[in-house]
Length: 142
Image (cartoon, rainbow, N blue to C red):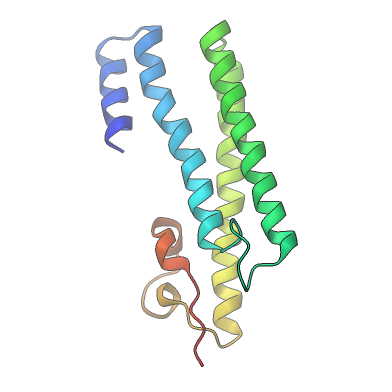
């Protein structure tokens, strides 16, 4: 977040292509990292005992697609200075973030309904799931 703040401050103080890149680059990278954190919180990135092969493969596919979107959007922006294309690809990336985050929230509700304990669902509002991906890990009560 510090990088986003620094980039935004420099761009708005000195509006030019380089400082605009400093403004946009951290946001794109953070969006990519947030997707990875959400998928990791669901336990689908690394094949585990309670993650199916399909979910693991789907998560790796989502990460690959979002990485390609990130690289393409930044490449088009840096090489061609085509801000409009960058904005559309960034919007697609954020849409994927929203879908994955919604999936995590839905999984939290399902796990709570099956008698499994989720630390965020029990004591805090479900919106906390979007902020604290480490808290999303579902613990099974025996």
